Length: 165
Image 1 (cartoon, rainbow, N blue to C red):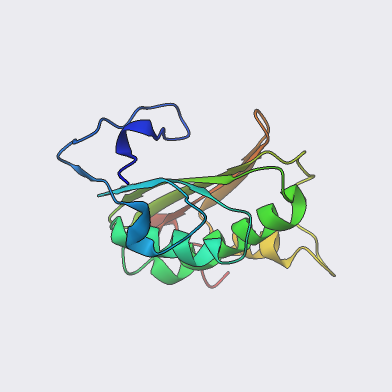
Image 2: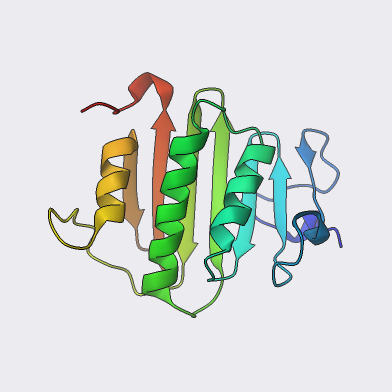
C-alpha cells in the first residue's frame, strides 16, 4: 500500500506523490507495524508511530534510509529513542506518535509530536529524568512546544556539537 499522497509533514507541507527527490515506501517494507503509514525521502522522514517500544527501532531505520549522516547516527538514534520512550510513557495510549525529521550532511532535526497533556521540561539533576538530561547534553539545541499536544524537538549539528562538556 503506497501512502505517499496522504501524508503531511508536521509543519503542514504536503509531500506530492511521485516527487522525484522523495522516495515513497510501502508499509510492508519495514514489516508489520500496526499499519503505520510513513514517507521516507532523501533528507526527509514523516511517520506516524504506534505508542509501543518497537517504534523506536522503526524510527531509527527510517532515519538511516532517509540519509542520516553516519557521523550523527548514534547520537540521533539515541536521542530519538529517548524522546519516543518519554512520549510512550507520558502520553500513553491517546493516539499515534508523529515523527518528522529533516536531515542534511552534518545536521539532523527530529520532531516528536504526541497528543499527551504536556509536561514541565525541566532537566532533573537526580533520580528520574535522565532522558532529558541526555538530550540536553548531546543535542545542539532542543525544545518543547505545546500547540496540539506536546511537540519535543532536537537538533544535532556537527558544527555545534556539545560532546565532551
